[in-house]
Image 1 (cartoon, rainbow, N blue to C red):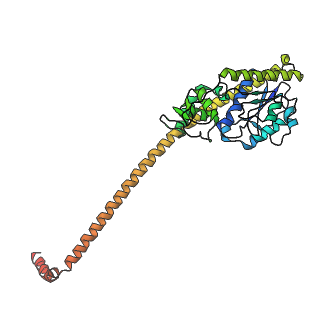
Image 2: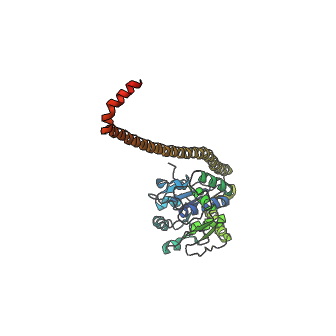
Length: 345
């Protein structure tokens, strides 16, 4: 189990999410905020938190390391981060955020409703467009066609054009669900996170009543992320951090690790392709074998039916022969026929 976050000396941002839940809307905001802040604050530690965290890991999280909020004190959490970003509406997380040290900066990001006590102590409330509009640093667009092909080989997606009218499968990882959206002709949903992802993917999306989603310009979202990064740097400077002389070795190592992680995910995609191809061939061979077995079974059933018919006909003929042999004419003429046969022999 990973260790709990502690103050790194370089700068740390705690991102409170609901990523321990399976829905796309639970997985999406924290990922976007994490990657966007990493781009603005290189070398900083970005830790994802959720109420249950890694205690409630799911297939859909794709292996994210999510630390648990439960059983940690407000003092602990405040000391572990320079700044906290809350992007979850989970009641436990919101109550815990309201009890953080008043001197600890808290940013509320894209919450549907903000409790009054939490809004009063927040550094600021970001109310811009949905983070799903800014997936450029979260997902590599070039991998989407590969994922679509793999999902079709594995039978997770239709082979032909399709529309998405229901909820996305919750047994697929975050990237695969975005791949399903990317290949759809139309998406019908009430979920704003799915609609924002569709806007980024360039897929038509509407509500069930036919109305469309309207989002503010992405520039507003990037401006708010810039503001969070500035607040983090200002807070670290006030806490005694020297931004000009950060440990370059640590930043270099962190960047190398992130790059390695990114490459590892790409390699996993390639490995899955290598696995998917023989699996698809095996399934095709299996389907062919099943079809052949079904055909042979049908032929066997037909042969059995014919054999039963022939057996019944033979039984009727034998019975007719017995009945004929038992007639008076045949019995009374038998001596004459026997004598005639001997005479000719």
